[in-house]
Image (tube, rainbow, N blue to C red):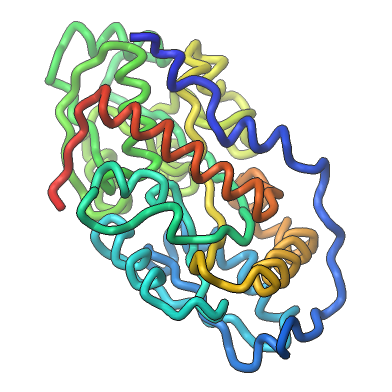
Length: 332
């Protein structure tokens, strides 16, 4: 198998297509087509409040709530690896009043959960917000200092390395699988309901290796309970400037970005999609949004609706190939 088939991510390609820079912050938006919106909007985030997805999306949603004529109410609907929130949003009226916080799960659900009815084509993108970095780490007892050293160490111990799966089909799960596909490493996957409990077990030494969102694992790195090997990001991060990127560590084709954005029902009127897209782009140009995302070391992702739609479709194709190659199966 040509492992480069999972190589340059659709994210990287889409980012190169995006217009340089961000739109400047605009004045408070007027009403849209047909006096839209005439009542508060809601944004369904399919993960818990306070988590990485929630905090990232709220940076933009809070600004949109200030700029739009009506406020935006965030509704967290976690569960079933993000599917509960996605399915809820897919059943909402196609009137633009319900937005979905989009994660890579939308791009993989149709392959991992073919009976769920979730399809990328069920939604129309508004635009993207950001991609947040994650870090490949080992527990401090593991005698390696680089990602290549870990691959050699783990290959000598097939199945003996415990690795968390904090959400089947999540970008972290698939990024780990992509790395294992590239290296031939065999591990034992341990399921978790979200990242926080897996981070606790990682600190206790019950897990030897993990890919974790940077903001969650930083305390363990700073306390030297875990050792960072590489950041899964296109460039080094402000918080971990001495840690190489996945490409610098020797695995450029294993880069996976945890990107987040917004979408609405696919049958929403194009004029409303355009209106919401303009509001999101304006929010992304504001200093407060940029500052909040910078605090997360997030890479601001200024994809418009068309570009984000293309990203979703391309990622769905990419991950379907990996899921088949790795024979990844999950409980429905």
